[in-house]
Amino acid sequence: MALDKSILEHYMKLDQRDSVQVMYIWIDGTGEYLRSKTKTLNFEPKSPSDCPVWNFDGSSTGQSSGDNSDVYLHPVALFNDPFRGGKNKLLLCETYASNHTPTRSNKRHSCVAVMKEAREAHPWFGIEQEYILLDADGQVLGWPKGGFPAPQGPYYCSVGTGRVFGRDVAEAHYRACLYAGLDIAGTNAEVMPGQWEFQIGPCEGVEMGDQLWVARYLLNRVAEDFAVIVTLDPKPKPGDWNGSGAHCNFSTKAMREDGGIEHIRTAIKKMSKCHVEHIKVYDPKGGKDNERRLTGLHETASIHDFSFGVAHRGASIRIPRQVDEDGKGYFEDRRPASNCDPYEVTERLVKTIVLNQ
Image (cartoon, rainbow, N blue to C red; front, side):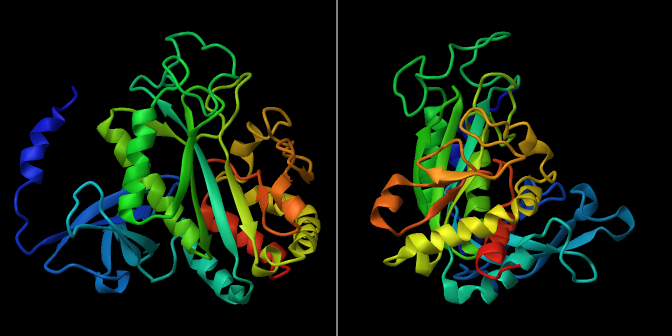
């Protein structure tokens, strides 16, 4: 039974007095999904360090056993809360086991170390997060029950009934990201009906992972209000449909300066020798999810081959046409799956290109 959300409006208007609600957010044991719970503070935190370390029952999230269940939450990134408004906050946290070591799903810990080592290169990232909306029955939004829509073609960046499905979700999510303080660059309807994309960035270093995870949290939270489901499965519907990726745009300071195209070509050469290592961390299952998507069809390269090209959306790495003409800028790694961990993706790129690891 769906609840009448209009009833909530009365309570959300009540004075909080001097209290602030802080929503602690973390990645659970799957490495794909997010959990959250709220703590009341008697002041407005201005930075993550203002917020206390907390804990949760890790045996219920796949992050500990029942006989030693407490897992620590270490605050790392603070944002405005677009759902509660006012002084209330969203707080992204890292997870640590009882012995104070990072949990298996805490990929941020090692990413921070790598980004610190590479800080002189000033690595910038922008991730294009594709996702698909499902109705309560698990059917792709806008698809006929028990059937398929018309073939791909009229849906990408389109407008109009019968061509676009779920715009309200995308618009609400966009505004929520802006209110939260995220660097959301844009959004658009994607190639498959019921599929959308938003872009976060440019962000430097570990901030890329922080912002994308919070943007994912906001997307799922917005979807709750519309009674729809968000899936980041790279290929939820087999057949002649585009899958979902998380294309990662990358540059260093040297790439962004005059003559940077040579640094881009050097980076691509390095990546060509580490293709397998990248594929292993570009989805949570070591490439198994991406294998369904990276087939060499539907604007993808084969998962088994490395390729690159200018304006080539069927390549592993795409150099935008404008970058090639300007002789500087960035490249796009089209291999990461929609359900990737951005901390792992950005760490691997920096290790390969900047640190030669």
